[in-house]
Amino acid sequence: MKKLFFLLLLPLLVGCASLRAIIPGGVSPADAEWSGIKSGATVSILASLDPRATALTPLLALTGQADPVGVLLPVTLVGETIPRWVLCEAKLAQKCNSIPLNAHVSFAGLPVGPGILWRPSRLTAAGTDD
Image (cartoon, rainbow, N blue to C red):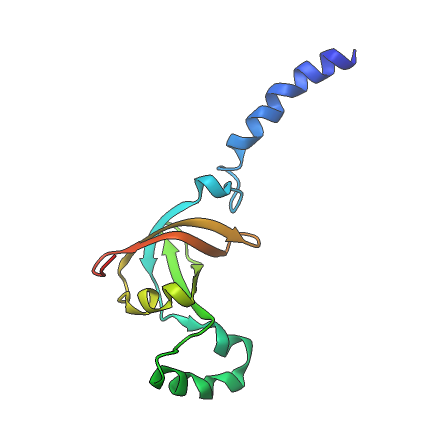
């Protein structure tokens, strides 16, 4: 009886990997590839963590150390109204800041949390140097 139950359950368990693509935010990291539009200005992570750090941002920019933590890039996908936030760490911050508003953005990477914040492994945008 247990073997029969296991054999009936096995196809369902194997098929669960393909069901993740149907569930919002349930895409596996290997499949996480998105394309959308930059729908707003980038937000400094340092300033969002501590409002007092907003005063430091111009000073850091003068020394060439703007956004030492990184920035959040809002990208709205086709058919969605809430943007997905791309976490542009310090090495990608300059690239994310240079993307013009309403530019086409493609990214792939890992979700951080429930799927609204993404850490990109690849990020390309129309009108910028890659």
